[in-house]
Image (cartoon, rainbow, N blue to C red; front, side, top):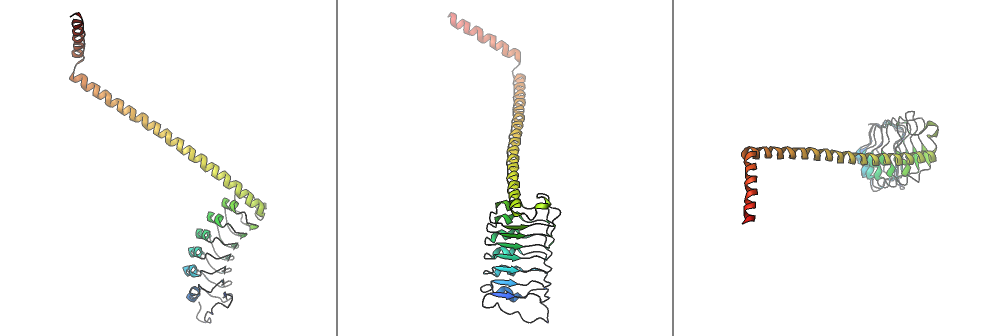
Length: 256
């Protein structure tokens, strides 16, 4: 926080703390001490570069607005904000959202447009009550197929992400089609993974078969070696002579 700024006031009686439009670069540590009273935190339209992990101490937080700042990442600590329902982080320099966001099971609205995001974590597909997902004007390459699992989505926008490869550009703000395509892509991916797993198992079994052949060849070679040793120790002529002697001995026994 800049030296000339006034002291941070506590949240009002409704649990709202509005710190927008103050030209702040850093956030006062006092903010993270109001975990039992802060419900709505608005620090939009500043020059904030980083959100400290102290964010995770805001146990009652329901709305977080950090839009229009210079933030490059949302801390993993947001996963500790279990009651959060709305996240506004548009107009920043984000490259992605943390996978820990999956822990925010009550999250209904995410506004992440006008950033530099190249990927969106697949974990977002675990936000079962998510209704709004705004990700337009980014650099996202693939819409996570896991979005197909979110039946509550009714407002999705990925327009102006020219590198997206799994949904046609003309459908990037068509929520039903995006959800349908994602569900289809996920189904297809799961089938491919299942087939790949079966193929790997067959290859493994084939390798076992080859290994068994090698083992048998090695055993045969050992037996041949043992046979040779026996032949050296007990010559073939001796064995033949012994066989003939044994034969006549049996005949004599019969005659007697």
